[in-house]
Image (cartoon, rainbow over all chains, first blue to last red; front, side, top):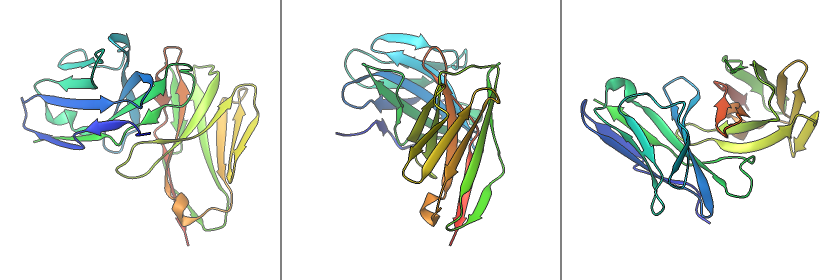
Length: 115
Length: 111
C-alpha cells in the first residue's frame, strides 16, 4: 500500500514563473491537506480539500495561490508568479473517508526554490 | 487566535535517559492532541494521539500526558537512543479538520 506521493521532490523556478506541485493521497483517502514549512519555522496549514471541493482555505495567501483536487487524478497546488518568499517545503497529507479525526499521513514534501 | 507553543530550544540528552518535551496551547479546547516525528528532509510521521478524557497514553517507549486544565501535553521518550534524534511536533485539530502545529522541538540523543 503506497503512501502519500508528491512530485516533484525538488522544484526550482525563477521569479515570475509558475510552480505546480502534485499530491497523490493514499489509496482510499479522499481528504487532502496542504501545509507549508518555511526554513526554521513550523508547519503552517494552507488548504483542505475533498474530491472536487475546497473545505477550508483559510491558510492560503489571497493572491497567486490556488489548489484543486479533481474527481480523477492528483491534487494540485499551483503558485503563479513565484517570488523568493515562496521558497519552502510544501507537504501534502491525506486522511481516510471513514474517520477524519484520525492521524494525517504525510508525503515526503516538495522543496521549492525560487531564484 | 489559537496558539501552540513548544520549547524552541534543542534538547540534548545522553543515551538511556528520559527525554521530556512540552507542548502548551492557548485559546483552544481540543478534543484531542497529536504528536508527530519529523526527520530532516522528510514529512512528519504520526506517533500518538491522546483524547481529552485520557490523562496518559503509552506506546512502547513513548508516553504522552494531556492536562486540559493546564492546557499542556508532555511527551516522554524513555531509555532514549541516538535513533530517537529528530524534531517532534505537537498538533491540535481544528473543527474544520486542519492541524495546527507547534514549531517543534529538536531532540539530540548522544551516545
